[in-house]
Image (cartoon, rainbow, N blue to C red; front, side):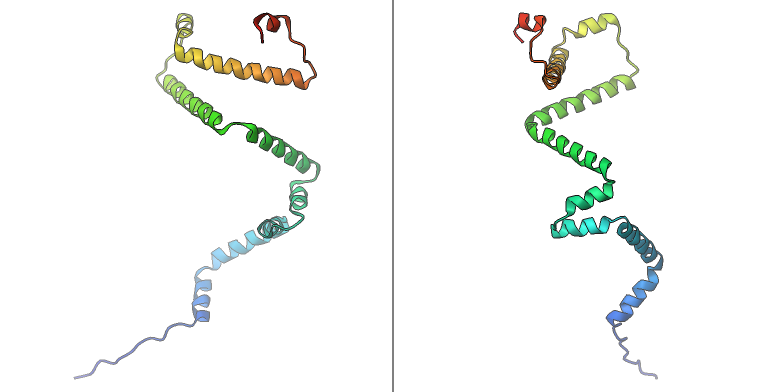
Length: 167
């Protein structure tokens, strides 16, 4: 009777495992190299490298990539938007965000049900406390926006109707 051979295959070397992996991933590697080449040609790799290193010239690189004058405008607008968002109280934004989400969901259910509203119902809704609170909030937003727009245009005098009601 034949005796079983003891055979243990040798472990492949790291070079052999790498070569096998490359053969199995040729298409993916080609796509990856194409993407890497595109990122390099458009300067994105340079910006990413500067971002990781925290090096100088990052803003200049971003301006160069984003196209000169329009890039400058984009960065200025983003900065102003950032200042505006930073000035908002996160709790107030959370409350208003939640209110808008709830309102949108309520509106979607209303539309999905195919409901409309008549003049009588509209006038009746003005007695609804939720509608009163929402309208008050919207009017306050409009009032604040109007005041800011007047001040931005240099108008600081109150109109007659504002003086009458103490606004």
